[in-house]
Each structure stands twice: as structure tokens, then as C-alpha cells.
Amino acid sequence: MHVRSLCFVLGVLLLCIGASFLLPVAVSLWFKDGSTGSLLISMAGICAAGLILALPNRPSREVQMAPRHAFAVVGLSWLVACFAGGVPYILGGGMSLTDAFFESVSGFTTTGATILADIEALPRGILMWRSLTHWLGGLGIIVLSLIVLPLLGVGGMQLYRAEASGPNPGKLTPRMRDTALTLWKIYLLLTALETVLLMLAGMDWFDALNHSFSTLATGGFSTRNASIAAYPSPAIQWIIIVFMFLAGMRFSLHYAFLKGNVRAYGSSTELLAYVWILLICSVIVSVLLAVRGTFPLEGPADLERIVRASVFQLVSLCTTTGFISENYVNWPSLALAFILLLTLLGGCTGSTAGGLKIMRAVVLLRAAYGELFRQLHPRAVRNIKLKSGPVPSEVLSGIFNFFILYVLVTLAGAFALAAQEIDLATAFTASLTCISNVGPGLGKVGPVDNFGWMPAFSKWVLSLIMLLGRLEFYALLIMLVPEFWKK
Image (cartoon, rainbow, N blue to C red; front, side, top):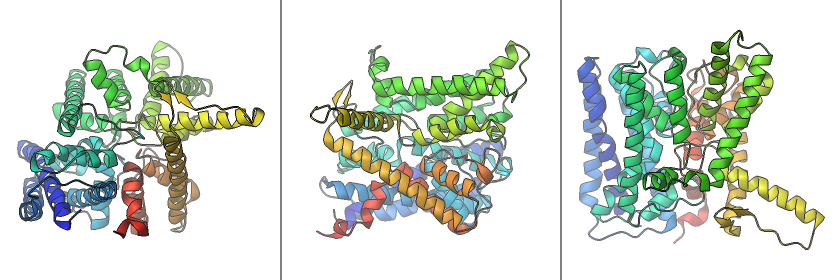
């Protein structure tokens, strides 16, 4: 792909990001919070950069991308988006470049890790931008751009395959632009529905919209220092639980259901595993909290609180949302083990969640069982099957390779942080929570802590790990392969 075509794609992306500042600017004007000027300057600068890149480089005909070019566009687009997203934090939040980039990466990758100790001190316009980066990153900056790019002569399917989570993203509709619009319609519908329900449950419109952005993106940025613990209302917490669960599901299932296929949810092996994992873990953790006396248990109201606390935290961490309703570091060690397990697993493929993904875990477990079976019956031929049919060998190989990369990058991040004299529990869980795009970990990055105290080098390392986890490695790592640069 020609450099001019790459510049054009990046320019359109910057224009989309610049246009998204309209909402934070409107919020800033509404509340008169003093951030309007910095947001307008950020918007103008990003749009100007987009025009400079896009206008002179508009292709005269449709550009067909090879897979390696699509990976390069995706990787570079996310880097450009994250640097652009950090501009208002520098101008309006007084952050350093390192902190602004970390916060922006955490937003766009829907990780939810923050360097802020006092979130409520930020102007509301900046808080809206912070949550909006989640919402934009939830389905991907490239998918947003795909609404526009096909009209301007840039092929989109290669970008979508490089961007989409999971081994087989597929298309919901025959045309790429229609696929992008379909995804965003579902996304908008769920966001609007959650916002209305949260307002009915007692949140004001500003907090309801911000938390809906974070929930549907499985991000975790809140407008309150205490996260969802600042809203002890059972109704608010159960609403967020439901929408975190929905956001962690494959969006193609929501599409099929809305099109009238009422059996769509029951036909997914991954969804059934997702439900059973959360159900079993929630029951075990609830019993642990009750038996160990972590919460008082004197009546039905106390029982409901225990169940709600367990379900909320496990759904939040499994879907990689990262909202906090309780300081779970004080929970029994076995409960923390389940929390780490769900932090690793993540949500479903084709959702806004991060992590390893439930489908990959299911395939890996079946492959392990198949290997044990072959030890007993060496001549037997046993394929790994899902409801959709046998798993192709290339998909199985890709899952194994992905899991190896997942472990290696997590360990490399932990070693890099440990080299900065960070204790092992903090280093390992910080690396794991960032690669899974979850947010809170254990140790000094627990649910009531932040990442602001870390050395600058550690923040850059974790920013890279968040990007690698969100893009599932290949879009960035492929550019380090020498063959990538050969014609």
C-alpha cells in the first residue's frame, strides 16, 4: 500500500476523533467548567492534522489492502488515536505526556487503569471525553472509520479482520459499511437503554451517560473516585451488572436476536460456557463471603448484598469492565484466585471485552482433553468440535500461538515492572490486568489504588501492553518481523 493511502486513512481517523469532541465541548459549555477552551483547541488541532493528511492524499480509486498492510494501518491508527486522545489531558488536565498517553491508551483500549488519584477534580468536559474514549474504543476506532472510508474509496474488510476480536469475526451484512453501521446501531441502542434505566434508578443524566459509555465498552472509567461503590443503590448496581454481561457477549448474537432469531443465544457454545463459568464462580464466591464472615449475614437484605457484591465483581472482571463496587482485596484468598482466573479469561469473541476470550479457553481445554484421549487410544482420530462444526487446524494453531504470546507478554511485562523495584504481586497483576484490558489488579494497583505512582518507564511499558492486548498482538508485533518490510 502506498504511503499516501496510509496518510489518507490516518487523516480520516483523526477527523472522526476530532468530530467526537463536540459532545465533551457541549458538556463543558453546559456546566461552565472552564475546560471548553482546551477542548476546542484540541478539537481544532486534531481536525487540522486530519485535513492535512487526508485532503492531499485522497486516492483516485479504491485501494485494495494486503493483510500485512491492514495490520499496519490498524496498529498505526491506534497509536495515532491514543496520542491524539491525550491532547486534552495535557491542555485541560495538566498531565505530563507520559500520564496523558497512559490515560488515553487506557481509555481507547477500554482498560480503565488510571493515573488519577482524584477523578472528581477533573472538569466535567474532560470526564466526558475520558468516558467517550472508552465508548469509541469499544467497537474499535477502525470500525467507526469504516462508516466513512468505503464512501471515499478505501476497502474495509481487511481492516475489520485486523481489528475484530476473536478467531473469526465474520460479517453481519454483505457490505462492510453496512456491517459497521449495524454494529453501531446495536451499540447505540444498548447505550441509550442503559442510560435511561440508570436515570430512572437515581443517577443524574451526566453520570448515567458516562457510566453507560464505560459499561457497554467494558471499560471501567467512572466519574467518581469510589467507582460504582459511590452508588450503593441495588437497582443501579444490578442494571450495570446486566449491561456488563450483555457487553461481554458476542454482538452478532444480539443482532440475530433483534432480527427475530429467538434461539440465537442458545445456539452458542461460547455463550453457554460464559454463563456457566460466571454462575459457578458467583455461587462459590458468595458462599465463601458468607461462610468467612466477610459481610454480616443476618437477614435477606444481607444475603442480597453478598450475592450482588460477588456477581458484580466477577461479571465486572470477567467482561474486563473493571468497575468496583467492593474493595475485594480483603476477600478470602480463594475468592481472589477466582478473580484472577476471570481476569485472564475475559469475555466472548466478537464482544467489546478483552482477555483471552471464553472461546479460546474452551478450545484449549478440549484440545488438552483430546491429547489425553490420544494417549489412551493412539490410533483414534478425534477432532475438536463445537456446535458450528470441527475446529480447523489453522484456527487451532492460531489459538495455541495466541495463548503462548499472551503468557510471554504478560511475563515480560511483569519482569519489566519488577526491574523497577515494584513488588512481584503488583508487577504480575498490573501486567495481567493491562493485557486483559481489565484495569484493577492486586497489590499496589488494587481496586482502590491507581497507577499514578509508577515510574514513567513502567507506564510506557503498560501502555504498550494495553495496546497489544486490545489489538491481540499481531497488528503491532507483525511490524517487528523482518519479512514484513520486504516486498
